[in-house]
Amino acid sequence: MISAYPPNPQAGGSALLVFSGIPNVTVAWSLTGSGTLTPQGIATDARGVASALYTPGTAGDKPTVTCTHGTAP
Image 1 (cartoon, one colour):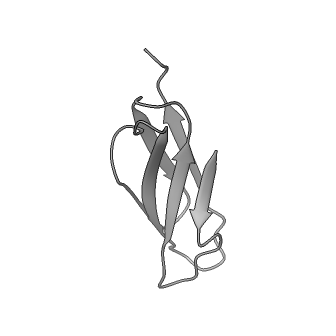
Image 2: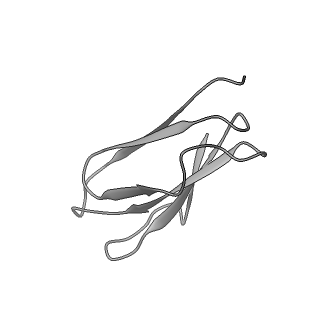
């Protein structure tokens, strides 16, 4: 599951995206639509959390962010 803080970032702002899943596995973030997505690491931590920073692009665009993850060892 991905949560956004704030949930609806405005132009000129940004949102912290937080993925909650399996602990200690690699993650890959992807963005479809405008804006930029900057992962804050390549794996979940011991609690299963990974994050990325999203900055909106074109006003009115409906981007999609996904986070895929590996499997537990």
